[in-house]
Length: 290
Image (cartoon, rainbow, N blue to C red; front, top):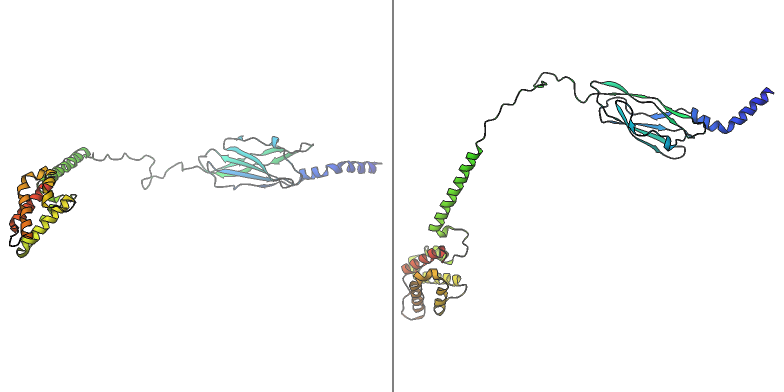
């Protein structure tokens, strides 16, 4: 009779055997490194659930501060079916003053079973150290209290800046005066036909002075007029340039003399000295903006 009762009890427990076996299965936990931690480090515990063990998401612990040293930042489940994992992320939120042994707290999580079995996680010891040493060695200038920095000599920047400014103004004024006296030195005056002609005429030899000088000065007049300039158009060209009015008689005499010298038999060209003098005066007037 008693043997029959035992067999009946065993038959009654058969449906619950997988659950009991899951509850009694050894717990596998991947623990974080147990040493060398400091404030700010995140330590993760990965719990591998045994086949048949299920966790209810609503029963999982909520992120919160768990003690003086650790805060539970995130709790999540990974995997499905029989390969489910529970991940617990803890962050070290305080720094000990010296190397100390701390512990990730123990945890009980209810399983999703009718028997309301519990999943027990033991605490896990870890060591943590301070961010900096508590005492600084008093050698090689590493004293905790440093001496005051010697003040530097004040810079006399305002005086130096004023000197530079006045020097620049003086140079600019000198440059303006020199350019007014010697306008041919102005490199930006690209279109200066009479200045260029004067530079060329000074290099002519005496035996070719008169013909070459007359031709070179005529080319300068053509460049200044923007085209060929002859005697009939000279009056209109001079009227557009009042700055050349004092030189108008000499310019008209030059055009008349070259007209006779080049096109009338036996007529002589203007002397080279007069051509050079006229070209020099034209270059000076050109530099004044005439």
